[in-house]
Image (cartoon, rainbow, N blue to C red; front, side, top):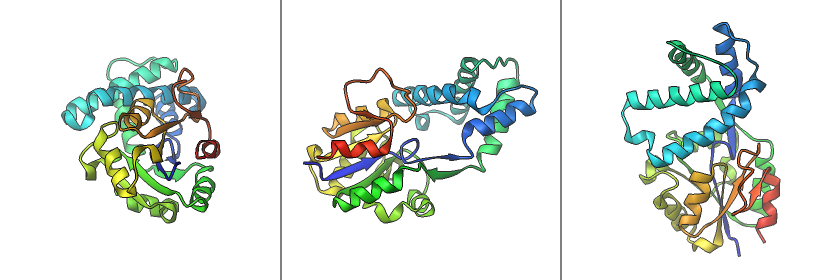
Length: 234
């Protein structure tokens, strides 16, 4: 019987505001392009998937600052090409630098379906944990968005010393919850990080695929909204 549910942070519980595609559209249009946020969003979501798959193979924490920057620029250029935006020369670097400046002003907000789901989980007396690779003060973020009252604990990869999908952060969550793997579910939006990581230690994975980035996935529960999660708790 499920006694605990662990959640990923970005893309699962929270997203950026203003949305990244709005900021990137602003940057591009300021440089003479004509691109709407809607033109960018599908490609941006696929780029997130590609980033996490690449990062699972070689973490950005294990490479130099220059290598990280080059990886982000390459990722951005692939995303723009897929969206039909052709850039060359110094333009990828210029777009990246200007975007980075504006991204600094973004904040996190919760998806609309998060707090109602958290309330229902608490009414079921389930343990709720947060597992994230985000290198930030996650407790402060959770307080800011109103999530803190629902959480029993929050773990970051920086504190644990290992990123998802590696086992230590999932094992630390089980230790916090004082449960065995079969008594927990982990919900996340990235297959290579959340599904692979949870399954690797015996935790049941649920892929939250809000915008059908993983239509081919059939080897684990795949839901489009948080409200669908309750079907997998009994």
